[in-house]
Length: 214
Image (cartoon, rainbow, N blue to C red; front, side, top):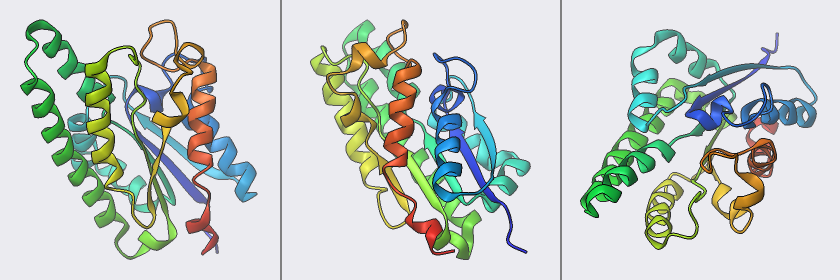
């Protein structure tokens, strides 16, 4: 019997969908796109945590055995992480203008991302070829600030290094440039409904090749 396809979304408030009405966040929208494009019902688990940093996501998948089981069985995994690492470092940076906060956050993020991706690969074991692991890069909610631009680029260059084989990076950054007014919620940090639709489409445009091999 062919098992039902499973989609697991992990990450921060972008995965939760903060800033949009219930069910209109990116993960729910992407789930709908997956079902429409693969012509089948897909089991969906949203394990997003508002405010989660890369450390929180790493702890979730290191410590929560039911989460590990879900990831083992998942055919599609999306990861939104890094925004909170950056925001927290930015807050410190604004108090004393010390770039060390940013460099420290970047180093920690890099280490956590390596571990997150490494763990997922380990859970997938020999099934990595038949699943999709899609990670988003970071859009820049403060395009008018040069420092923000610099740091977002550093984070994104690092995220891009994971783009290999069935692990793919969705370019949210590119999609948001020049459209921040339209795509951001009133808090100027989270996407609004339109912004989440765009984000879901960025993931959608990565295609579905790995699953076609099944």
